[in-house]
Every structure is written in C-alpha cells, then in structure tokens.
Amino acid sequence: MSPSELERVLEPEAMDTTEEAEGYDRMDHRAANASFSERLFELGATGHLLDIGTGPAHLPIMICERDQEVRVTAIDLAHEMLRVARRNIVASGLEDRIELLHGDAKQLQLPTASFDGVYSNTILHHIPDPRPFLREAARLLRPAGVLLIRDLFRPRDEARLKELVELYTVGCDDYQRALFAASLRAAFTPEELREVCNECDLAAAEVVVDSDRHVSILLRASPRHGR
Image (cartoon, rainbow, N blue to C red; front, side):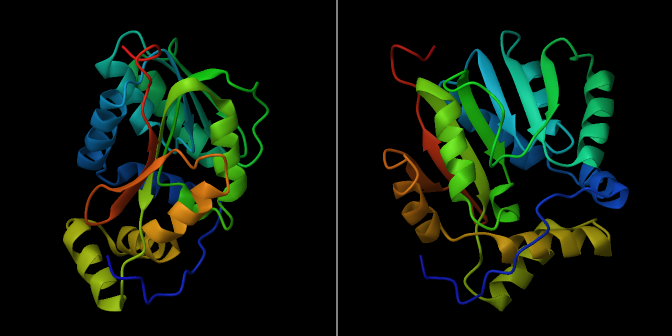
C-alpha cells in the first residue's frame, strides 16, 4: 500500500452537539456494522464486552441481538451521543444487557483485566495521540481475550479521498458527506498504527486492512478462552 500524501487533520475528540449526534445516528452504517460484528464473533468474542466510543449504540444493539449470552458495557465521551444511545437501547428492549457509561477512552475508571472482549469502531481518528487509548484497551482486556479496534484509514491522496466520499455517501446530505470526508482526513495509515501498537503492549496484535477504507487492530481469543 502506498503511503498517504495527505497530512493528518484532526477532528474534534467528541461529537457532542445535538446536530452531530443526531446526524451520525441517521447515517446508514448497517453494512459496516454487520461486517464488524461478524469479525468480532469470528475472533471468538463471548461473555462481557466493552465498547469504547459507542456513539449511538448501533453496534452493541446488533451484537446483543445476535448473541443472547453477550453483555456489553458501552462508553462514550459525548453526552449527546449517550442521550441518543439511551434512546436506541430503550427502543431495542436491551436495557438489561447494555450498560451505558460516560468516560474518556484514554483514562477509563474500570478494573484491569475485567472484560472478555474489548472493541471500538471508528474512534481512533478522533484521538490526537492514540497511545493512551490503546494502552487502556490492552489493560482492560482479560488474558487471551478478544480485541477488535477498527477505524478508517487515511487515503493516499486528495483524489482518492473524494472518490471514497462519493462512493460511500450516496443519499447523504452535505453535512454527513463533510463528516465522512473529515473522518478520512483525520485517520491514521496502517503503517502508523503498526508503529503505535508496538509501543503500547500490543506488539502481538495484527494490523489488518479490512476494506478500501477500514483497518483493524485485532487479537484472537485463545482456545482456552474462546467458544
């Protein structure tokens, strides 16, 4: 893969306005979320999972609907996102299996090694320095547990960025298209993530390009921990 010619341009760390939360909730992430959920269970996810940066809670709802034994603690920094997430969880009838907490991904007030699986979807690009977040994810994961951190990756050039926006924002309004373009511009490259993992107790993790716009950091469940 060619290195990106684009300079990384940071996004706000929290999407904490009503417009941002409601706009993100309305975007159709079903295909990407289904792919994420499929990969999570392929890796051996089970038991008590931690969702870091849950946004409107689309993923924990999908995951709990798929597996009746799974419980999810879902965390977000943005109060507006948590408001939307709470509404969606109540509508799904899954309040007894999805716990919502307010928290900062870089410093979570949770016990070490307390989750069978830790996952996050598209929050890395919101964090200026991913190292504290990745160290927290590694700290909270039980030995031999499942880790799946997926995000966008920064395109190689401006032309490719525009191509991806045109391809994946069909039917979206101008605000939603701008959100997606800004996220791509704020994302890391796979090469950058590999270097960061090596510094964050995640040298054993795989860094895998999943699609034309997604990259994942992952650890598989060991035979004694998985299903």
